[in-house]
Image 1 (tube, rainbow, N blue to C red):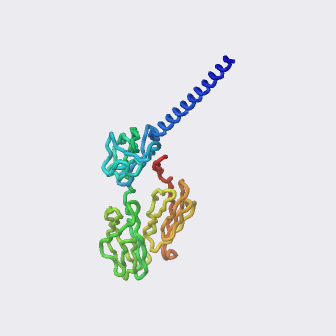
Image 2: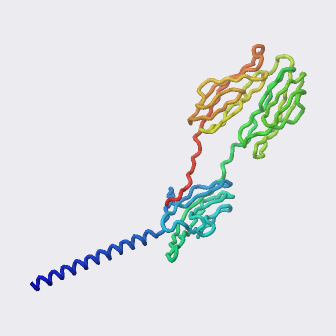
Image 3: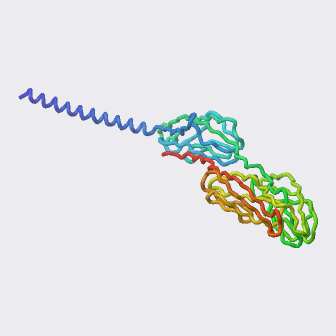
Length: 343
């Protein structure tokens, strides 16, 4: 009986020991979980060639956030190695300013090669808790801004005007940074004017004469074309030079972006009447007012057949002209999405 009693006591003690051992192990596991949940970690943006941030463009605002999660949700960021180009700085500039880390500003210059940067990121310690610190390396490239196509004056000759008859002609240019401003040097026929903003030459000249003129166009960026010399002939008889199409090529269009080009001709008698046949890019129309315009939808190349006739063409020989033009619709440029903070 006594032996049985001793066995029961031993079994009871073993159960208590096992219970305390289980509780201790559970507390230890909870401590490990809590400790690791306090660790700060950084998700790395991975691109071919290594860790690389989205490219910046010189002269354009840049703002990228380093996606950080874990630890306390307010961080202090320091650029520990490397140098940012003028106009960019690491944020926050003050410790724990807004809880995000990244780079912002407007870079002043493009870089010849990527900047190699190393960030020291420290979490905000709460109370007596230890603040964790990590380092991360990134490459950042600042690209030169895309330059627009050079400003080019397309109007190189003027169709003849008929004395005492209305005359209208819109000057044409491509490239540069619209809107354009037009300048004419030389004496215009009495009753004729040039609108500097629209580039419209109009009026009703009273008598036959030759008017040597010079034409120049400027864009919104202050760039100007060369002066182009031409002559406005005012005739009485219906004997102007044969009609010729001056537009020989069309600048490329971009899918999803508005496009407009004025078709140009010389000879005959203005105003001209333009028509087009063939398959135009979807979303584009021709030729109201002598313009090919619209917002193309699909990428590809199209060929259109254009024809122009001058006023009073039933009385003139050589009062019509035709030609073929190709137009290429390019895909829009790729857009780099900014990084976002993961929590």
